[in-house]
Image 1: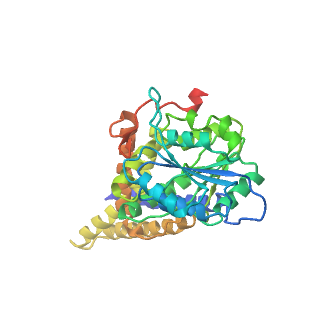
Image 2: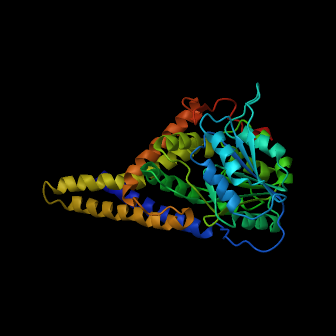
Image 3: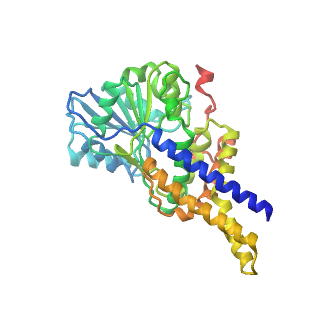
Amino acid sequence: MLVFLVLLLLSLIASILYALKLRDASHQTPRLPLKPQEGELPSLSVIIPAYNEAENIEDCVCSVLSSTDLPPEKLEVWVVDDQSVDETWEILQRLQTRLNDPRLKLMAGKPRPDGQVWLGKNWACAQAAAQAQGDYLLFLDADLRLNEGAIATTLQFAQQQQVDLFTICPAFVCGCMAEWLTQPLIIHTMLIGFDFKAVNDPTTDAAFAAGMFMLFRRAAYEQIGGHTTVADQVVEDVELGRLVKYSGLKLNCFLGTELASVRMYRTWAALWEGWTKNLYAGGQRNPVSMAKFVLVILLMCSVPWMGLFVSIAQLTQGWNPWSLIILALSLLTIAMHYVIRRIGYSASGISPRYWWLTGLGGLFVVAIGLTSVLKTETGWGWTWRGRPLAGNSKRTLKQSS
């Protein structure tokens, strides 16, 4: 009983500290509000790699085209079908015919070159970048949706502040139960863990980029070698961010919940494959950090629910003051789950809905974390949409630069 009491006290302390850190991250992380201004804009090439994106691609492309009235001489939207085996290419062709928008350009991606390691979307991005003509290159994931005015706002900011790579964390959308259980915990923990102030400080080595939205000054992209340099990287966005920093270029990462939204995974299978692919690799394969993450999630999310069930079971057998104390601590810590979700809402856009399932969500997140370590280190089942992530993916930029 004493051990359980100590665990619950630690759980409550961990939850309070988590809430305070999330509040600080929410308040201190720079935000870019949606405020397009009048003035001349540089030319822009939007690049959207698409592999089996039949569910997403039409809405994504339409959101980009409707977000700005830039003319064809200022905007081109390249969509690269990366050898999809679903209806992505057919949907794109029908969309191009229906819209008849000269800004929309389609590319049937070529097979990956023999004898070279190209992982993920790097090959598709490299092909489009070679054809793009814009002064700036904006790489978007197909599950992202731009809000009206987002392009003008970000282009103006990048140009005025002379930013070489500007990336944002958009609002996150949850739909299926798997998303509600896992996304809040993972996204909010990432917001706490990333030091955005250090990332935006040119004097530090800290670097990060969100591949769903990366706006490059073209000259900077070419200087670092673009996606060709990170061809064999699974988490290529973070590696590109590091290259920008190591090259003495300016990197900025802001919250952009007013600019765009993203629904990363629509099914449990996609969520499992996606996060087990990215979670450990995105944390630089640091086993100590992953161990801390797993322990904190278990302590904060699952222990109070265990305490609740144990105390109720004991109280049904008779009066017990220790059980009442455990019950009170469990309920107080569970209430902190709602507080944490409310605090995180302003930073991530994820509402507190289903907050009372945080205990179950914690177990799923722990399973994802442990599986991510196993897949990344062994290569067993390490795939994205069925494509194996084999090859020399352990190289880091520090080792190669």
